[in-house]
Length: 132
Ligand SMILES: [Zn+2]
Ligand SMILES: [Zn+2]
Image (cartoon, rainbow, N blue to C red; front, side):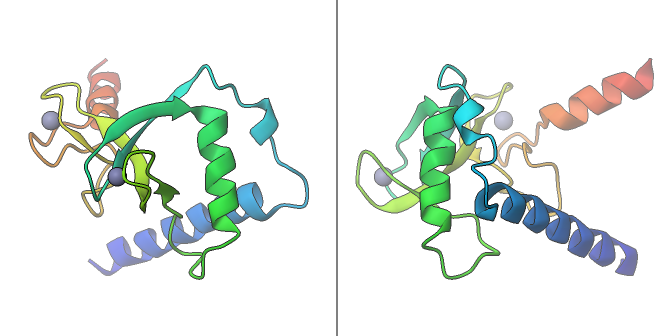
């Protein structure tokens, strides 16, 4: 159990490091090179609107929000285009049941674990690789 906690702490630290490099770096690290043709699915926790936005648009907004947040441990939330509240987060649509949920909603599990039917694409792909 202790090892799990340590692993969790390490993962959080790594994620934070990546986050800081990406958003707080002196250079505009690569956001401009992202394409708006690639879509990011997002979900509003308040009005439950879900819609897609361009990847570059998403990270540009995220970077703007990151400069305003008080707690750097939290991923900033974007402004909802439907209800205008800062409640929008990256979302995943479950391949199995079609449920749309915020990425990483199940703690200490794969980020794409569906809270409804428990399917995880990451896990499925890993299992398939091991089976070969
Ligand atoms: Zn909303
Ligand atoms: Zn599902």
